[in-house]
Length: 221
Image 1 (cartoon, rainbow, N blue to C red):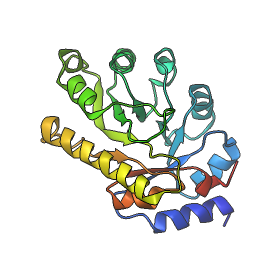
Image 2: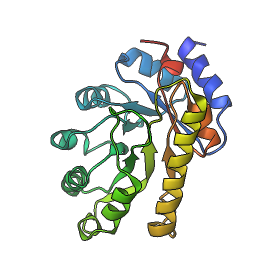
Image 3: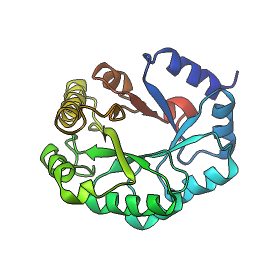
C-alpha cells in the first residue's frame, strides 16, 4: 500500500459515519491524486481555478471536485460546468455570478456560505447578521440556480486549542441558526465544512460534516 493510500485508510478509519473526507490536492501532481483515487478517494478540493480545470480535464470523471479557495467572480465560468460544491461563498455578487453561470450550464450549483470565525485579518466570510440579511433579501430569492447546502469556516491558525474549539462551536451555532430560520424543511441544508489537517478532530467533535485535509493525506509540501 502506498503512503497516500495508507494515510487515507488511517484518516477514514477515524471519521464518524456521515463525515466526508475532502482530500485537498492543491499543488499536488496528477500522479498523487491518482494514487488517492486508486485508494478509493473520490472527493478532492482545489483552491485555484486554473489548476482545478486542468486536473478536471486529465483525471477520471467520477471525481467530485470542490472549490475550497477564495473564488473571484470572473473565474466562476471556468468551473461552472462541473464543480460539485463551492465552499467559500462570501458575497451576494459572487452568488449572483454563480447563479448566472449555472443557468447557462442548465444546472443547480451547490454552495456553502463562508463565515468569518477566526481572529485573523486574512480570512474571508460573512458575519451571522450579514448572512441573515442576505438570505432574507429579495435578491437572494431570485437565485433559482444556486442551492445553499450549508456553511464553512476556518479557525485561527494557532496552537491554542480552546480558541480553535470555540471558533468551531461558533460556526455550529451559525449553522443551527440559519437552519432554524430559513432551512428547517430543507433536508439538503446539512453540511458544516470545518477542520483541516491540524484541527479536524476538534471540528468533528463540534459537528463538522466535511473535513478538508491536505498534508495528512499527501504529505507536506
